[in-house]
Length: 103
Image (cartoon, one colour):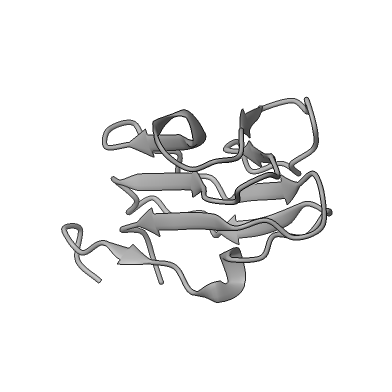
């Protein structure tokens, strides 16, 4: 996959559990990343540092529910090369992941 190739990740990110889950492997090739919480009601915590995701955990950021710009993180420069983990607050939550890192 070339640097200018972007792809939507598969269904493994469509239903985040309530335990920390790796959603992307580490990739030094990543130069674009979009994470969007598209769930209507449940929030998501994302850890961009390679560590486990946890509510209010070190290195974690919160993506509120609802989709749209308030529920999205986009990197088109300075993308994290670490593995990325996420955790849902309740049941399973929908997360859209688009990047150009390794498949």
